[in-house]
Length: 216
Length: 203
Image (cartoon, rainbow over all chains, first blue to last red; front, top):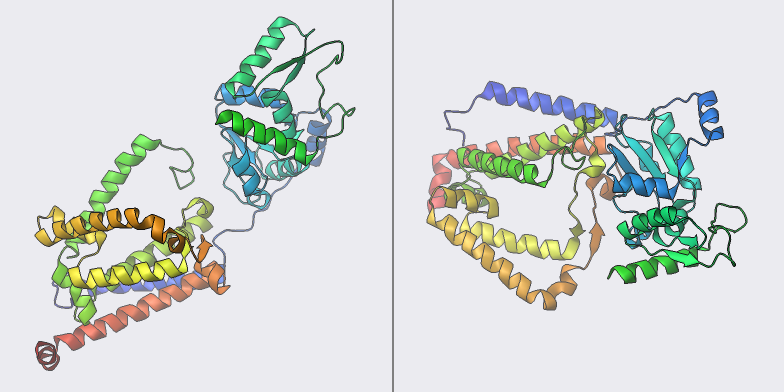
């Protein structure tokens, strides 16, 4: 209402001018996010990779999640549908492109995983380049998680204490440990050993389906 | 520190609810201060005699839009974590029409009916009752209309995506549209103040 005595034309004009300035600058800026530049110390990165300090095992990650490790953020860089199907508890779905520009907590610990390990390793590089020190990836990806945490197969010769520790973790995440007769297998078979090829996608799907059924 | 603070776990659900209550009270307070609890004032918009609602809405939109854009640009806000309501074109057109009829008839929208009720206005209370009745009827009728309610889904669809322009350009255009709307609204209000026009409305 123009007869309102509380109106202050001066202030209104100032606000209008501020809006115009903000709007015009926005057109010039174009995008609300600025390009992210990072830099890496190549020697340092090579050393980290060589010393295998760039990744965690699924079991380590499981312990971190269980113990509520301070500042831990687990990032799932698979497709939305795959994430909806199954993901590591507490993980956030983040597309790889988002890794390049998402806000970061430089003091946090980031763990990346993909289906295998390649995309996660690439994401690891991006986060390192953006200056995060504590970044790790799951080398065997979700396959490794399914094998080591959700459905571990432990040889019957494995010491009782170690077996109990594995069972405790597996039960915590709602998985199921199987004891395998040591005469048929001497070690825990793993996709990482190189003796076994990485499981097929359909195998992983089948495992996920079983886990989901169990949860219901 | 990065916003949205809740999304980044800076506070939990309990604190979030307390903050929501405080923000809600502040929102209602300022709506009332702006005269938005008065159905006559709100209805004036549909007769082009008082366009306070239009000016208030556009002010809020432009303020929030510029704030979000520049906070994101400054690296203080992660826009991808800001919730964007999903678009369902056909059901939202019908919903908008129903909403508009209710707004013009009752003189209040859901938010302002709460404000009106809080100050003891009976029309506000009646509209809140209507709102709950509407929610109930919609819920009961959902099996029959659910198919339509879910149709023409576009997901979280933003203006820059829809028109294929950059965020910044859309922000600039919206500022221009808002300022144009303010000028137009003031002109309409001045016209409504003129005695000759008043007579015409009365007749």
